[in-house]
Length: 219
Image (cartoon, rainbow, N blue to C red):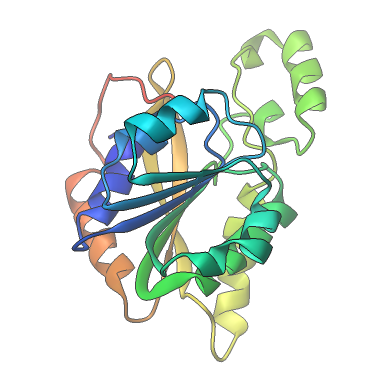
């Protein structure tokens, strides 16, 4: 199961779907998925956005931080059906992105969070430079993965939702998918009380959770 397949499965639950991606980098996942209305946000795109605008008139590109987008530009767009969060890999920023995303999500919309579970000790360090130092000294951690401390969101949010009388979602479900050289990474999907993310959970977990794929899924 590829990352883009998880996102596309969510988008396919909607008619004339609207998609927002936070943290786009090279734009591979963003341009792979199909939606009627697409918005990309990244402080530094690693592709030619002017060319992309010409080739993809259905896409909007914002070369700013996610905080700037939600504060100054999100209200210019209709509510989104699916929002994919793959921004700065820190707990605090991802938490802020999550609650900002919920504010601009349809009531039955779906949020998907990348890098919810690290694949090694070094990949779990919140500082990328420190993670690279550890990788240089530990041969068994020579992969290039860096998820940061986004994993803290999984535990803190689930605990918060159990204790809150009116939580914004019930829990965050984990979904494994593939990227790079057949490496496994984990996405998180907040499951609301009554919305399509419950349907997505059945679609994803029944059809894909234990699937194996050899295709790479670059970002």
